[in-house]
Image 1 (cartoon, rainbow, N blue to C red):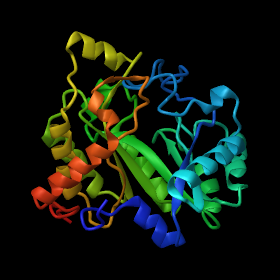
Image 2: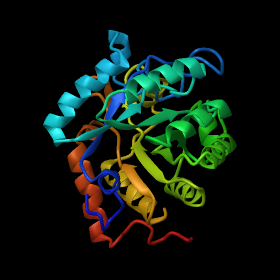
Image 3: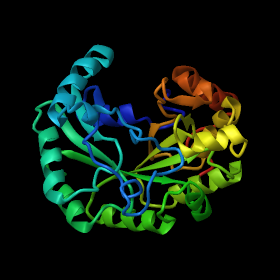
Image 4: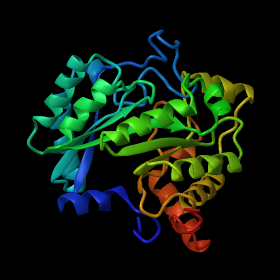
Length: 305
């Protein structure tokens, strides 16, 4: 992706380490309070039993084994030299600190792993975990990735997130006080949201102390509540053209210094129910770039400051 259109994650990592750095997705075998009964069962309406992960924990692969396998694959594909362990599946701070310490330590034991990035819910980050991670960050790169999805509480209720926008704000404030950078996850195309609702989320993100953004398309995974909504006509997916325009306008409203880690998701082909165009990742990225070029859109140009 062109640097002049938006600030890419790859360029940020190359500036930091002077080489190609790739994330290795880790399934740590954890769960989520919205699935295990603490908050609810079944999770968000778009989430399945793999929790957007690889399923590696179900195959009894340790964190170290997942890293070793990931290094082989990513070196071959990207010629990567260094790696980040990305704890991706479910909520990766939702466990006692002693268990989390063991998982994070195992990941950082690999000499080629320069840091960890932790995906979790904003209501699953007690201060003791943030304090521990702050200590790790003195010698390693540590990022927290929080799922916001939308800055509209009514939308969060609709998709069964079972946390509020305020919970996200609180997590961000406490994380930043510890000096840990934050990446916010948002989803475009959520039920009931208009383009203006999505851009309100962009403006919300832009006004907070957030260092990076991941933008996802809401695609429908088989076996989820959302699939039932699709089948009954309660939900309709965005078209590629609608998504392309929404991403471009979203990027124009976030600060120019914010790192863009992702512009669309990577559905598992065997799990995807709709839209099928979501599988065409490279074409989708090309379409976004072409739209931005055609409409003279750059990251941050509509950012109010």
